[in-house]
Length: 322
Image: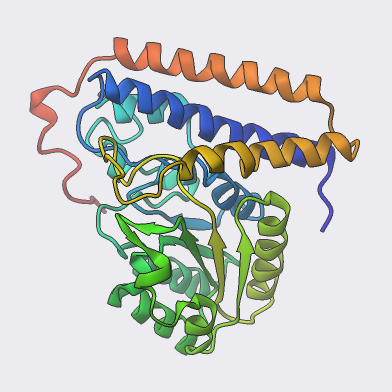
């Protein structure tokens, strides 16, 4: 594994963009400016970015109801994303998808999904298409610990192994399936062994460590591209906010999030490792922080000013046209 300086700066920028985007959406939702439901990805940045940094432009991903981070990691337009979340006509999905169904097919981001476990079957379809077309493409299914107990996910693991599909399954274990601890809800308490039960090689990694996730994704995707079939990664971290915005989080121990932010922040770890190792310096990372804050501020200003979809467009984009 070798990451050049430009790679490190790009990865940090994307992780910082996810964090700033989510923190700002949190505030905007609390003020009443955003319609519908919102599920935030803050604290989980390493998974989306470290995996997607190993992807090629033609590769495709499926997401969850917590999809902003995956979208940014797959290089979706941040301003168009903010407009979509505000329900504006020129949003990424013309204001019709909102937070839970944000997508950009042109970037290979096949969409956030309101159905728990809805993404893995779609990833299998994308992987099967890539193999039939013989275009070298790979699909990645991001899903949570709750989705890991869904039949759709388990059937997808089986299907991918039977047909040796070029698909990477990424379990984003943030500790809670809505409000239920994953330590209790996942039978056997060992997701890697469950994947191995389908004949799929897996690995568990610390989601606070960007470099550990990057290495695991790099090795898994290299094996997939070399014809080894599907792979599985179990990433552990915690989310900084509740299952949804407005969640009182009474199921979480007192001080859990505060301790996570203080001692296990993946962005702080990344900064410390790259600056102490001499690959990057603090000033350039601070400059990225400022640029990202300005980007998100401008995105919010544009989203507030943008018009909503016209009523006559209600029935458009319902069916695909071929």
